View 1 (cartoon, helix red, strand yellow):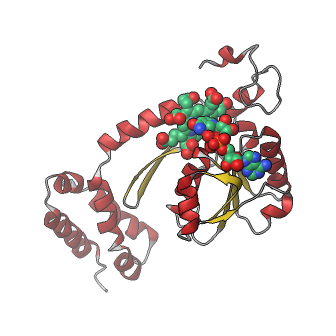
View 2: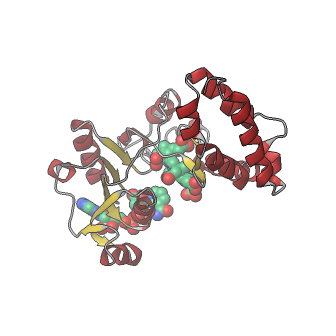
View 3: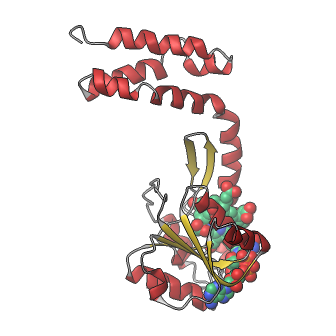
Length: 248
Ligand SMILES: C[C@@]1(CC(=O)O)c2cc3[nH]c(cc4nc(cc5[nH]c(cc(n2)[C@H]1CCC(=O)O)[C@@](C)(CC(=O)O)[C@@H]5CCC(=O)O)C(CC(=O)O)=C4CCC(=O)O)c(CCC(=O)O)c3CC(=O)O
Ligand SMILES: NC(=O)C1=CN([C@@H]2O[C@H](COP(=O)(O)OP(=O)(O)OC[C@H]3O[C@@H](n4cnc5c(N)ncnc54)[C@H](O)[C@@H]3O)[C@@H](O)[C@H]2O)C=CC1
């Protein structure tokens, strides 16, 4: 929806309530986002709200080995099952204040109560921690991109909130271009990282080694696409021979 379409309408983000003045729409496109990959394994992540959106967020965090607590008086059957099997912790009550954020790395708020969502955002900001209130840009200090995952590869697409629908389309199109062969090549190259670090003394030499394979002739991606993994292993072995220092 073009920004002008918000004018004079009830505020979509519900933060300011009342009529939208487009502040958050403008702010988002003016915000340079710092893109990072978070390690959630073993970290406490709190999802407040246990509806369809809460489930989606809990599953996303679980897929990254985060330690998920869902805080909500009512949850859907899937979350109930995840709690029963011990995959998540369900605290069956309402959000009670900043003490609920103690020891928590990241909080995602998806209740259907705007006042609660605002309180969570403000408490989290007071603690300088990560907070995302789903679909409410002014109540997020990080936003979630659309992600295409294949093995160790993750391609994240953000439109800075301009159009999540477009991010989803781009994800589909990326999937057609970047298939399994890229993930396989990443894995094969990871297997020689130890060798490279132990054998090639400088960053420049390691860079030259990896780039000679990735951008090599024959093209390793084309070889993998043709199902010829042995040829890629040969390519890697040949690069190892070429790049090994004479004294090593
Ligand atoms: C800012 C952000 C904050 C955040 O939530 O993190 C945000 C905000 C808002 N989303 C809205 C709408 C929709 N969001 C989706 C879907 C996704 N939204 C996601 C992220 C983000 N959404 C962050 C920015 C991402 C970026 O950088 O582009 C994705 C990528 C990731 C995820 O959520 O995990 C996930 C796709 C995942 C996937 O499938 O891969 C769909 C489509 C659908 O539901 O299928 C629609 C309807 C179509 C449309 O609007 O485009 C609205 C208007 C609400 C309204 O109109 O009421 C707002 C608020 C506003 O615009 O004011
Ligand atoms: N369902 C959808 O497709 C979309 C929903 N949204 C928005 O995301 C939010 C969540 O959506 P749903 O999961 O569908 O909502 P829902 O109504 O199914 O779930 C709301 C959850 O919040 C919990 N909750 C309410 N007050 C609470 C409190 N004080 N403390 C802790 N938990 C509390 C409820 O117990 C429930 O588990 C809503 O604001 C909705 O407008 C946004 C985009 C799409």
